[in-house]
Image (cartoon, rainbow, N blue to C red; front, side, top):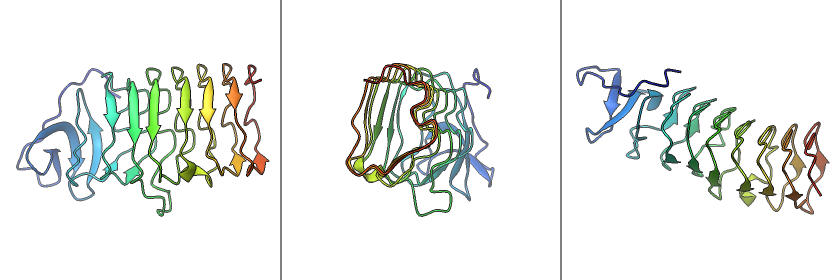
Length: 212
């Protein structure tokens, strides 16, 4: 939560933390070596894709002001809660490597909460769980397509207060629309309900006034 911080550099002799990937390239992040986890990042950061990092920690990139396209490497297995909260990402590509067999499903709550510059998301087919309220308050999102592999997920709070969202493609075998999934999506115009849908939970579509 230090939005103007531009650089992290860890002394190469530090045995617990590093700011470099396995090839010695600076990535502008502080990495917990033993846990292969990014603790925090600054400025124009790079997420290593060489296996030296497998997890992005809680609020690691909160309020980062760099407007970038983020391609999360497929070496990443866990995204801790709120890891990119209020950052200035413009586009994000989420891999299917997030480990849904973990107790926490590998995908924390609110990972992209209130990312107001985020206009495009791509979620790779094969991802089986996405965290509660992942895109809550992403007010610039307009169109989203969810992969069929999320059919058994609840999608709780996923797009709440995404006030510019107009169109959503749901997973073809989706069984339920979760609590507050589309809460206050006031510009949402079209949702195609799949044949498999069995439940619409509390406030799932509350105040989505433009649905036709």
